[in-house]
Length: 272
Image (cartoon, rainbow, N blue to C red; front, side):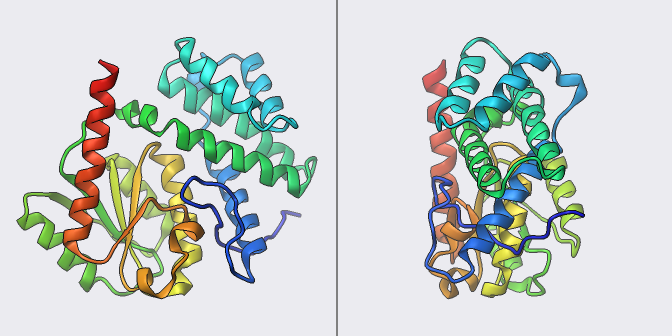
């Protein structure tokens, strides 16, 4: 029988599973970690197997080893050795995590090991976000996707913020769906650099955390802002969801997004 674990995420801004001051933190960590493994594993592509089976097996061993740096070092060496970004993610990393996910489904690894492995995967993806942005050859620009959390019924504030930013010269797509998988597919098709998610109450923390994990798996390198009343209702929102930033107004959102675009452009110019 499949394992059932309660919900939400305790990754901090650097995606460490540091305990948040919440009673449900253990349940949060378990759910978040399982989501990371299953989502990244699902990205494995047979047509990206330039990452050989032996390399995938080596990374799997490193992810589950006692050495906390072994997997990150292995991925870094593969990248410096010339492995392309799509092969690195869809072949090497996702292929290895798929093996971890299969072991987890067979109950061949323990919960502590799965937690540790998912932490390492999340950290690697964070370290390589600038590399992943190039998967779809996206260029930094004033474009973003806005979407309410799938279980969120309030849209007025989100739409008003989107309209305000459009008047400031931004191209904003507002997407909505009560089904998380459908929303993820819509966002993935647009491959945005920035996604802004709206939510009102702390009850949305679990859906937000799951959605952010899925977005990072399906749109590697995506930068996520959370807006709405939840940003004042939950002081540990970034730690609990793994988002990059919070914004309560269009002005703040624009400053944050422009800052992120500037950072991406600077990083690109440094590589030239």
